[in-house]
Image 1 (tube, protein in one colour):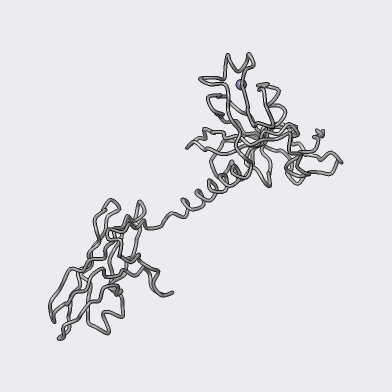
Image 2 (spheres, protein in one colour):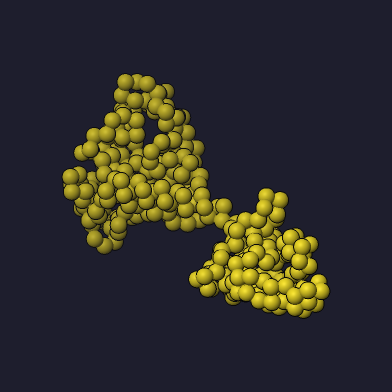
Amino acid sequence: MRNLYAALNNTEALNNENDHIMVTIRLHGKKRQITINAMIDSGATEDFIDKGFCSKYKIRTTQAKMIREVYLADSRPSAMGPITHTGKVPMDIGSHRELAIFQVAKLPNHEVILGMPWLKQHSPRIDWGQGKITFESERCTTWCLKESPTVYAIPQDEAQEENLKVEFGVAQSKKDQRVKVKKVDPQAKIPTRGSAHAAGHDLYANESKTIEARGQEVVRTGISITPPRGTYGGIAPRSGMAVKHQIAVNAGVIDSDYTGEIKVVLANTGNQDYGVKNGERIAQLITEKIV
Ligand SMILES: [Zn+2]
């Protein structure tokens, strides 16, 4: 059995400015809440949620009873792919709350599209030109609303830009096995990635100091560091310092909850005084997993 869908105006065909608006929704995923901008689109014959978005945010989807192909108005199969899953997720729009059911599809330009089923179910009054949505149906006032029934749409450019930021934010936080660095002294240099074969980031001196022959000194870096959770930061010597200048690092460890300034203990193992210059690379920072 095939179910035919009419054209999805805004995902695959030309935009018609007057039958869609963007609105901020909040989805209550299994693990977290996601605020994203959805398109309300009277040209969409279903309510859609993007497949990649669901897996990224752990929105629970269930296998549909029947696989359905999505067709365009000219009966070409849509690039959205067949609908194999539906997603069920609590959704807030302003103070309007519901358990939303979406068809999971590959949406090239959107995360969520609220189409005709949603529009019919809640019958909101929409001023498409003003971008004003009022929930006033009996169903909504009885079941969905907590406070004010009016929500304002946001400009489409702004909405899409915000959505990009949300997506980008996730990509970053996944990668966020990164060290968080804070300048204690505004003049301090942020650690930089060492040479290709070096394991860590170079730490810079934030003061000039002379280390006497056979002596040792505590040298400030002007920064504080929070290693990613589950890791610790270690201070290691830079090979050049040890070989060329006979400067060793009395290694320290930075716990992930350590927030004070990093100070490096440098020991001069040679027979000549060594002058550490402000801004000189003095050690490297290495993060390792706690086993
Ligand atoms: Zn409602």
